[in-house]
Length: 292
Image 1 (cartoon, rainbow, N blue to C red):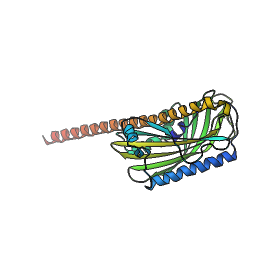
Image 2: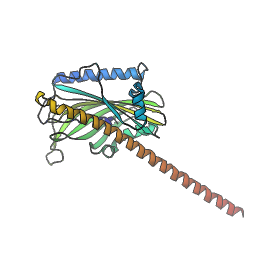
Image 3: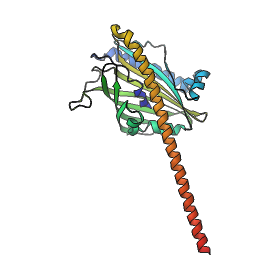
């Protein structure tokens, strides 16, 4: 869902060219480092592991099937030089699933264009191990004024704290806008250039199996171009609304994919058990016939 990740952050676009500046990248790196430090505190028990457990009302709403999304308000300044940092967190509960079911789905990158349609146009795995994945995505974004596509190379690490508790960290090691996507002359623009909105993405996902299902929390962060002052009054509310809805949709799609896989596995198991029962019955009949 790392990716999962990514969908949540295809934010509204402003149709003007801009170039990513080194000072913007430095501010972004500091912000992500602060988020990773907070994750370490959660992982080692210095803070609650799940965001939903910080509020009984929030936990109740999520357990009852609501997807809860909120903008985070960390102590780090979100106004980076010539850029903006966006940070949203969302939580969902997938009943009837176990944590292995969820992780299997979010690591099934070959199915991302199916799970996360239409935000993910295609996905491809570069390498995969027990704890690390490298993959690429083509992400679509219908923005306010233009439709854009970007190609992202991502790196994800997965950590297990117990049989029931896991977390992952994902970041894009490269993001490039695809100019004229879907047309004969489509090509990649240099990294950090283009009329698109997104420059960097990263995410932290936490999983905990309990209460008859799995809690999934996704914190999605993005570095984007700044919004001109003349457009900010109009664009900023749209950015927030799209950010919230796209993160909620990513969690909803993840839950739907997991539920579909769990149901299919259950059907396969029942069919297998029935086939085994028939085989045993035929065998018993054969033995009875021989004995007569």
